[in-house]
Length: 258
Image 1 (cartoon, rainbow, N blue to C red):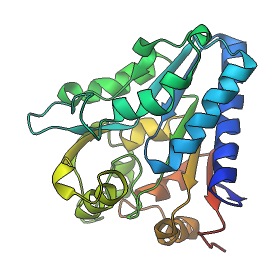
Image 2: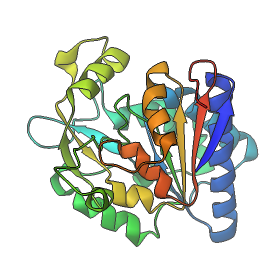
Image 3: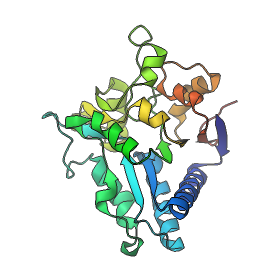
């Protein structure tokens, strides 16, 4: 595991955008295609602004770029929330990244994929069919979740079985609902869906490279546990310790690690 210290949110955003830009540019230049796994949330807002600027300034041909988002909220009817839902991740990606890409870069809306609530397992096959993810971008929940893979007790599932979990619909943990309501829904928990469809640990860990970004003080505690090295379903982010090219970049102005 590589641990990278950055000064603050701006430095983290610059670092993450440059890493993704370099991976995408390399893959597009060598094979004509690139598959990026993307995350949402406040952590990524500035990164996506900077990434679009980099692609536009470099004149990068993005016709071979495909993106695969980690998750989407699920409505009470069992389907993904519509794009006009105030918390829709489709709307988030459109607003914060895709609409900022110059049309002449050639990125197609049809090349942006999201896990389908009605057939979540098909998402894993879709990713495998395109050759897997070149890089997966992650955040970390305050309870240590990645994507919406919530912690589970080792009495419920073995360490190895948790790492093999596929994409699926899950019930959101109370802490996740409360946290996301505070950060994205004006602290109104009534706006928050109670379920989400999430990319599983198996396709996440199959990515060639993983980059996790952290910039909230509440993320220090789970990161310290990741740093301790024990892999457990009680701390989903700990599975990054099993990945040969995983990196965690964190802001030292708010997160103190050894």
